Length: 599
Image 1: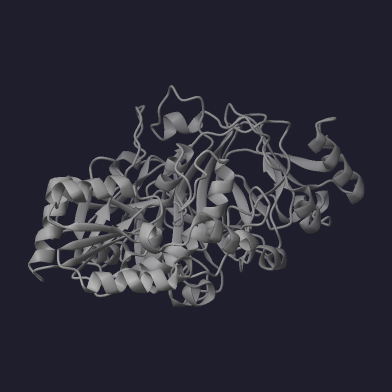
Image 2: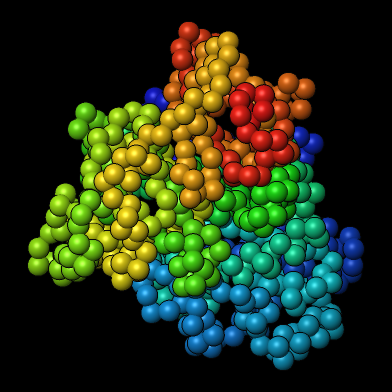
């Protein structure tokens, strides 16, 4: 969990879910003494399995064990039984492809990455041990399925990516200096999918959860505390740990609004609700444990998503909120997202990235590129993109793509297959489906990435999915700021702002000066406070403690919450506030339509 020097801001950069009745141990001496004592209380020659997610520093972990538990032998399952790099890469190659960015979601299970004969020998050796033993590594429980103590050393993906940027190779690889996009691809399409399948089998049986995200300061909670934390998070409004990242088009707006380091060159992205990537912070008194927020989706999918959304998507969180800052920056890349059939046939993903741009703020001359211009010749535009890719001449975007003025609180709808990008001088709350990696860049304004390499474009993919009928008339009539008043009452007004009927996400905006009643109606709600200093979320039946959110913060209300109220706080009294709320269409227990129903 990285920190930087904040400016004055009430944006909570480190939100957490407090878990009463449980404690956290900090530091190698306390952590490994607790593990060792627990193991020795169960067996004179106990077997401890510490199952590690990719990215955990195994060398550091083994040094800590050796220093704190000298009476224990240490066995590294990866060294003893995992396949070697050439064999692993050969297995994965079909799924990795030769593309720099895109692969195909792989169906492997972890046992396939181990030599079955060596693994069986290791099991026999561990069964015949004469001394206390710790087996560590990804899949430690494969060698020690009946361990006296089982520990999960988990790793959030964002922390894992930071380590990759600093030279961490992929699992069992020697590619530390490889392009980060290729390392990320191997993780996203293969390794992390396999590790996620495996760790879900451990949630019910782990004795301890080990947090190694803060190098040199390991932390430990019991398995019961881990499970209690996830249960608590599934029953109340929560925020995930946001992360911020620079980009070649990044701007300056988030620095002041979100309390970021003012000396940084820019911030382009904020992922504020992407459970696959973001962390979830669990609070234990003065200490905080950082875990992948996807663990909550895996552990409590029905409570979080609702049974109808879960039935449709499985244990995946289908709605993503993030911030895109080009205020004082540059245009995003001109891009298009694949159609559902294309993403299924080419990448193995079962739904695509429909999205929208909600404008949080804008400069007077800001704009959004959206849809192709009426009457253009598709082959001519694709040829112009190919010429631009060679560097021979710039792509004349204004000739082929519509440019609509953008102002604060506008909402631009972007169903898959629509050419689009946010222009400079725009602060976007992007509301979309979750498969965020599947962006086909068509033109990037001739820029290099922060790594000094040309940013990849995918014109062939783009040409295959662009919907050429999404032209000027279509965009103007169906995609630009389609606001429909739904209901109103004393101190509130509800509007439907999208998304397009081709997209599965419904978005509602509530303007309010007084408390507003909402209800999840059995499906997860994702919201952002898009106007006003702060607001309070409360339960009409005191099912959870009141929860305060601030301007531009994204928060999740699990399906299990049911009824909830959003009210101005004393700091916001006299101001007009607004939230935008997204949910999956067709999954509500009651049909939408007005506060107290869809709310």
